[in-house]
Image (cartoon, rainbow, N blue to C red; front, side, top):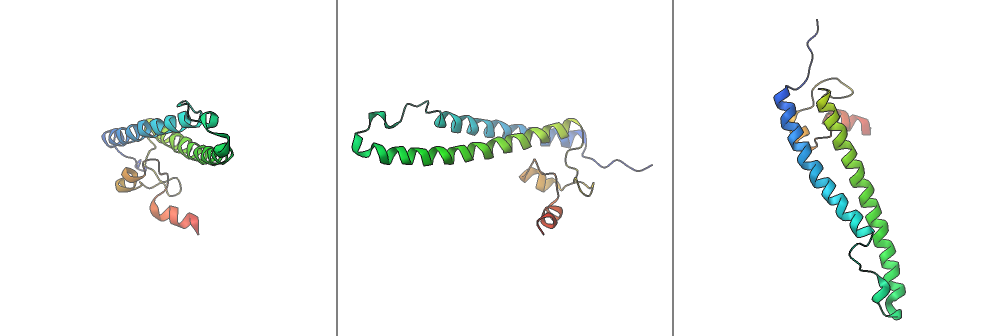
Length: 126
């Protein structure tokens, strides 16, 4: 009978705490970006003189496009963190999806949503 390779429940709890902290921070950043995009702060071109209104509207559009890209990246990061929490619950967290070996703890602490070891990530790019 082959031995199951996985992190212990205590180690999984440590990673869960790391992920939950990162998730809370990521969600707060996402909420801030979304609030800025929806103009909840009331800063727009309505109180600007007509001379500068066109320039400000162009800058506002560029700013909103960048904020949209940031929001998309943040939403993707949040999704990856939530998927990592599911892997913890399933006790499959930290297992390289290609090799079946444990991903080193150092990598998981740095990139807690990782599903590949550094070596596998590098080989994927080539």
